[in-house]
Length: 211
Image 1 (spheres, rainbow, N blue to C red):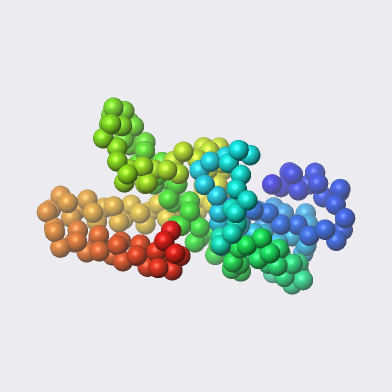
Image 2 (cartoon, rainbow, N blue to C red):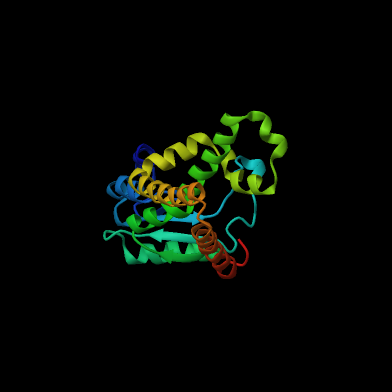
């Protein structure tokens, strides 16, 4: 985004408000704030799918979605208010937080799921490609986003590398708990781990109307 910002900056009116829709905010704010100053306000609408191209466009894409607006200390309050108003106008609920807080939270809720889906699809594909005939709904649901654009997600993970690394490490710890419990025949621990996950998922269902 930095090189593009430098290209378009001379063409814009000095009062033009600038925002973005990137999935990572810290590096974007660091790159664009020096170019656009206080009139740049970072934003990330949490919407979309594994599909790409104009043929996948949806008029209701942002309806009911959350948009995270990530002002920095240099951002102008009037510019922040205008960006918040814009995202609400097209159907989003808006949350304001710092770029760094956004990147940590999205590392767990967005970036890690893509790693997990790709790893799951990859481990089955590497183990035995003919296992496809045994695939059911659980595997399809768990790996849907593995069909996303590889170039896009390579860029996202590298742009948020420290937080993504942290989220992967936390997942590895939990997987190790599952592994040890299975190896040792520890029914109590397995039931606890499954119950904790079920409680979390049910809470998300109730809060976000069946995601």
